[in-house]
Image (tube, rainbow, N blue to C red; front, side):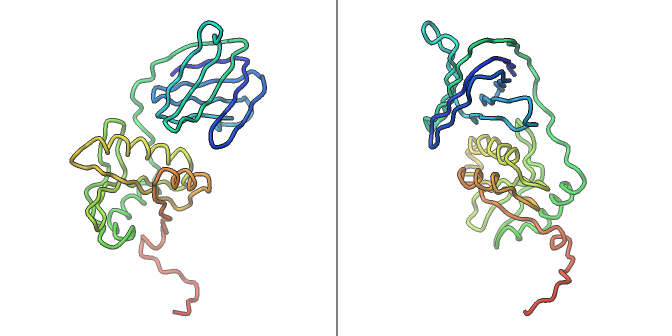
Length: 223
């Protein structure tokens, strides 16, 4: 990971346009190729970012100090450096991944036991299907025999969609599994996460914890 603190302005050119005026900011360049720009008052959320796969070109000559990040759709993130205050790189190695809390682990177990709640004809391949970047929560097949990777969260946010996207990119390189599509499953899915998932062709599934546990809804029903 590369950490750069610089006074810079940022321009985004794609389906929309956005401009960040000059200010001191933190720029993160991760090993997966992603680039994100952070302020000191926005918690974990970046001001702007470019998700992988993308390429970073650092300008030279007359373009020195200008970074251009381009993704596969041709969208650009242009960072104009005015003053670099800090620039360092660190090798973090392979992350062991998030250890799921009890509820997420239980949701995974319940969904594996009731895999047909995803749709008629679904069959389980296995839980915790290991890949080079971590385990996929559930790998299964749909009624047509297509491989499906399922990522499970208690609360579905953008980070979970990004995680599933990385898994899908890797799984689709395996000719024994491809084509592989994804389902993002959670008890609650944030609107931004749903939009991103839909944009990437990933299905969304709301998990009813009580229903998976076999607990009947005590609300009155007409039928």
